[in-house]
Image 1: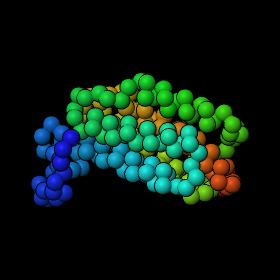
Image 2: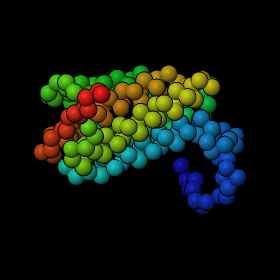
Image 3: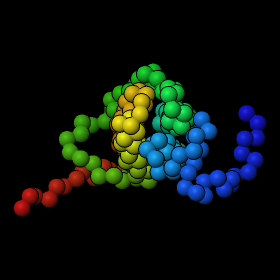
Image 4: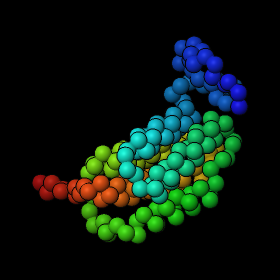
Length: 184
């Protein structure tokens, strides 16, 4: 690939615009930039989960692969009309989700984010994933977007929730169940 980033600052964004991979300049807060920027934020949150010590191999390996797919998704969103995320990517998430969920007790109530550091980081990633999904849907209202990208993010947020549950138990924590305040 060579030295693509020989100089980190370019000053080209000082006017509130950024360049897409096509070379087109757009506002930094346009829906496309919001979408791939939030996917980047999600990838960073997953990096935080990966920095947690003692992750089970299935979770560590899955999250590492997911980081690669999220970079692909960011690239897909930066190049209008480019589809990189495939149905097989979503199916792979579902397979891991099913495997991890098989040993968990059934969930009857909402779980508060937290429990252990790894679980809390996973819950944060899940919340950012939901926002990334909303940003991609907002973009989809304005221009064509790969529908599989939306499905992938939807399934990924489910997987991150299940991973948080698994990590909470693996680290010896307990899930805190939401206690709703009675309606007045």
